[in-house]
Length: 509
Image (tube, rainbow, N blue to C red):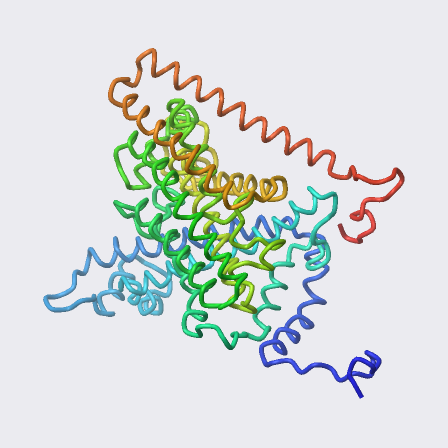
């Protein structure tokens, strides 16, 4: 008898693989404990997780500094030794009156190895990427839901479906990894990693603050742009190796799109580099500490045009609407990743959201003040106390400002996806070659003459700075007002009067 004709209650339950069984057991054990807590204290837990993550990074950074300052400088390695031995570590800890110094000597002794430190840093980078991707996926669903007069995820995790991304990730891990028979197996399996690993490496050189960077490279901008270019190669290989007409069309679209838009994107980034005179992203970020009017986007009308041009080109770099032609769900089934499933399919989306954060981070550092607040850093408290450093980090400069600016730019990208229609590939190339490329070339040339002949402090420089600042302020306030109006009227539906918004019918919402 066919399984379709058997009632669903009498069918045999599908057999789960060991990973799926473990996930089910853990879910059953933790559901009774965590469900009521998350239903009532989800917001406090989220805030606590953010604060705890920052304190954890500070703790690791402090331990590294302690090893360098109190141990490595006191007991230098002997000739021929690459590392300080354990005994000098124990002596240094005893001299500094650290509790349990004899026990802590062994784990601290390992931290003098640069490779071990790099492993810690890479684990932190990977964790940040996973958190950004999980939050962005949930956030995009919520933004799409409210724009389309619906709720978005509301069930998983109780509080506005905050755990929906985690549930989807566990589902994808448990799925079968399929490879088409006619596909190039080696390239098909390698393509997701060629897409995800460059996104991880781009985070390595992306500074979150003056000291919050994994590798402070003198050519950090060039390194990040190179990694974003390699990420595109993985998409093209995935489309070609799948041996499907839909995936090949998506790969061809990606190739045409990126070859076109990488030129105006790179030329737009030369404008702030020309103003500062350095490719070091930390140097560029620290040069904008005098208040919001000193941000490079408001330095002159030409830098403001370069900022807007870069952001539009970055949408094409991340395959975001209206430039999401490589995926084209309504035309190409799923585009370049149509034949992928399970974990490898998930890697493509992790890489996409990681690339979104990276391009928003570049826009923040090069145009929007980096990790500095709109207040001048000269107003900061001149004290070495911990509370003073915390206040300065919250009000004047710190990684929270950088993350907040990046999240605002990512929100604009999500907003565009659910507002603007997808354009044709000929329109994409025509807009780049006929409009954006000539515009950014004129902006680059005009900014060159501006930097050569306009001296900071002159009347013309002040007028250009004030004009660009006013235009940028008006654009920012316009976005805030429109977003606030949409949030205020989020329960207004395009339907007959008397209907109840779905969120009113869900318990715990």
